[in-house]
Length: 366
Image 1 (cartoon, rainbow, N blue to C red):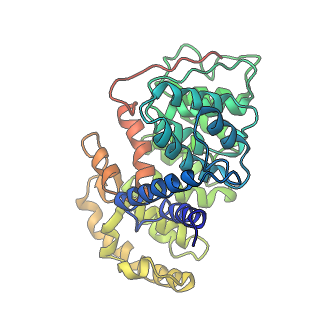
Image 2 (image 1 turned 180 degrees about the vertical axis):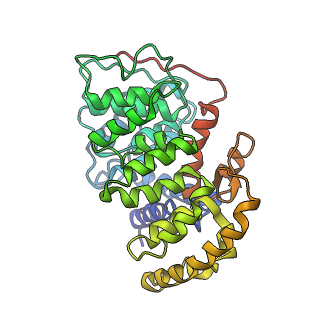
């Protein structure tokens, strides 16, 4: 196997890791280190057939990131931080310049990348990334706002969804609303998400995890009126972390069309606690058909066990079986699977309203 093949195999493994409950932070760290070592070796060969992997300075990195057709955007956001670490490790301003340029590039289709690029950029921990909405597409503006949200930046409520703006799309206004320190009228916000067919978005996940239990239950009840959103409701129950949803999810796991997604939500909430009712080996049986059968069988046991335990357990939010609060959130992030980490990150935004130590206001010209 040559270096390129080895590198691509590691990229493929990483994508599997990020959706796995059986992966731990150390596994991702090892994968990152292996990618870095091999990328360094590839760069020494300087094969022009692979421009992104051989980019060495600001202009080459930007050009290759935008134009390279060999890699998906999901893979590119793994490769970009590696390139920055190799060539611009201590040059923060140069790194910021690259991110700013990519946010502003009309050649990069940010509308197709979901939250991938915005999340990657937020993890680079820059204090400031300049951006202006002038001559930008709505998708570019929305990606930047999502980046600000992921950084934990918030705007004071001087302008939001209730204030019309002739040059602003309804969707952009929704993004701005989620950037505010406090959300006004969550049910109105949900209706807007629904009208825009945006309930499967990363922004909606930020919205759901920001709600308390009575409000999120109201939203789920409204969503349940649309059968096309049934699986999304089950998925987001896991994101919410509310233990009150465990009985509903146990019953959903009995339904063949809902078994796997209900399991993922239960595993997200309960973590290893689920092993007390469902044997670990059957939770991760390789044969999917057999796995579903076992999960459906043991769901009744889980439901029975939970009925006995529920009166003794306070109504709290759980991620990976740990109560979610300011004191525990970093522990959850540092010691859990990538699936749990993703959800815990959203709750950290809710708990602290900021990812960085010092709260910052986002400055955006809109």
